[in-house]
Image (tube, rainbow, N blue to C red; front, side, top):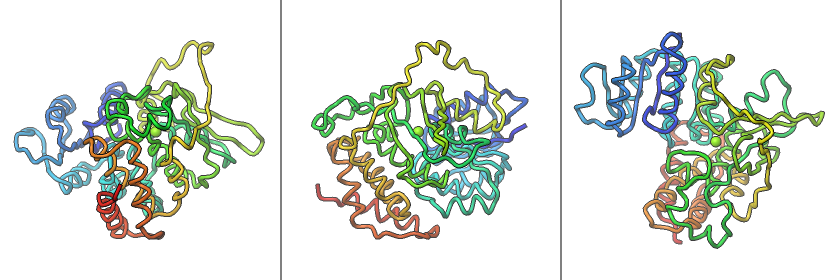
Length: 372
Ligand code: MG
């Protein structure tokens, strides 16, 4: 019986995690804690169905629950993690707050199922060292990283790693159209249904940039050997190439429930899914990425391994995406804000907890001050 805490149950990954929990069944998994941000309408329904002993939310509205021990605020979410005594924690909050919860979680669980990119990108070596010290197993939930993790099981260190990208909603537009793309155009993702920021990040390929950094840390691999291609149907998620020229690719339907389930059941495969049936119809075409269309992807490669700039890259993007979604800037200006923010951040490594959040805060302020 797995005792699971879900941090961020009302988001896209959180909801799909609950579907996986349903499939696993009550005799295999129990939700001991569940937390959310502000979507209390959905959260109340989830609490009614899953009856976790402890719950927490960022929102402090009082009508949330009579039957459970409910805590509020950042401290409340940490308290729910601590007091519920979970075996596994699903970290499915978005944004850099996820790093705070992930670091905290390392003291209270055996396995951290990680769907929060910022934990690795902003936590860098500081986070991974602590995870190692605390002997907490990190299971990547990001589909590409789960794929690479799976292709590497029982094998040697590869020569190259592959990550695929769908290309996002603007993949067939020319650079000028991309520059002026509207919010509605950008939010229509061709393959995945996800939160707003990550959908915008798919179109700028900031998401892929963050994933290159994530892969570089998770698999201890230089960024120049992490290759990226467009796979339009996202059937290939990732893969590896070995010294003898052999390659392994992970293929599956673009469905986040697959990596979520694997992170919970590893090393077993328990959840039954139909998968892809007609292999003769399986199109595994990979395309080169036109780097000119995705300046933010180029920036990510340049800063990979420089901890302070990774933090600033993520923070500046988060701010720029907010501005874009509020129609304050053009789509093409997201990468300009990132680049100009990075220009003003010193290159630093070996950061501690306070450094990380100080740089993050500075980067957010600088991002909002950029003269376009
Ligand atoms: Mg991904």
